[in-house]
Length: 413
Ligand code: MLT
Image 1 (cartoon, rainbow, N blue to C red):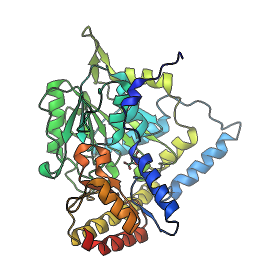
Image 2 (spheres, helix red, strand yellow):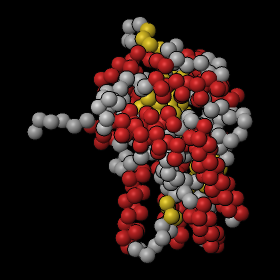
Image 3 (cartoon, protein in one colour):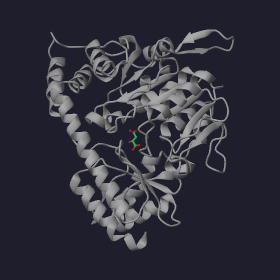
Image 4 (cartoon, rainbow, N blue to C red):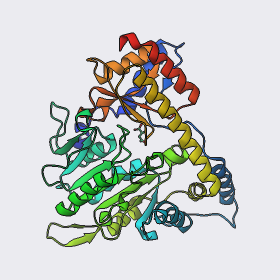
């Protein structure tokens, strides 16, 4: 035996939460083939690609079969035709200036939020909100930055920032200095948000402590309220301390197509062990050129079509459709006495489990008695225990049916 494995993998929880849920639901489905299961677990969209996207996507695929229009490897950071749209429509329209070399088109915010830690030393301390999107934690476990998991379900070297009913899901600033801070707003999984003043506290903390904020804004398009920032760069100083991740998955149904982007401003820097300064934009570029060959031409053409007037209209309709589901879920669950959060600027509804039920008990009750799949809150971290997440990504019909089924369980919850 000569090949040694990366033993950090042994420190991971045995299953990725959504894989674990799939397994349990598959087993339930096999034992109960008649059950009409409504899936409100994983945050995957259910509405198709906008027609404005599909028609451009098709044309670009045909171009790839035409010797005169064929495209091979594209630019590492993405084609200018897409970068220009991103900068103009997502940022300049909000008063944020970015240049093309600060935006990196990629095949997903999951990959980028998972990979970004590679450009940082293993010595950095990492803070995560708790509950949290598991990718931030797992990628740091794999890299060897977290140590082992303690009995309380927390990795020894991670700094956890609990978000619960007690603090209205607003994380407190870390008591100690931390180097890297993962924030996701609108939040996955709680569906809650930070307003501009609250986000400014984080930017100020990062400036005072020389930290970097890794800001996941994948759910930005679900923001409905005026005082909620769509980008961390709306906050003064953020260009010096924050990397932002965006995605076409949740707004434009690209979960199966794959396209996203990451903003790494030129002002961002880090130090080597000798105290020399390096700019993070160049480091991320260096990483991408070795490990990533860009998003396919047809997919980038499809992403560009998201910004066309017709594309914008269609994605607004989809977001409104899901947000109507979200408000139905909120109202229906409140009516039967459950405590529910999120769902106002986000497609996620975070439910306090009733009585003394833990997250998995409530998951089992919903699956077995109502044939509804949620995501147990504890799967997102120890402070998620006692909560369960439902998504609004479903048809109106299924959403209404699911709510009617849960209402019938009222005596048990
Ligand atoms: C979720 O359900 O939390 C999402 O599917 C996460 C993701 O987009 O990977």
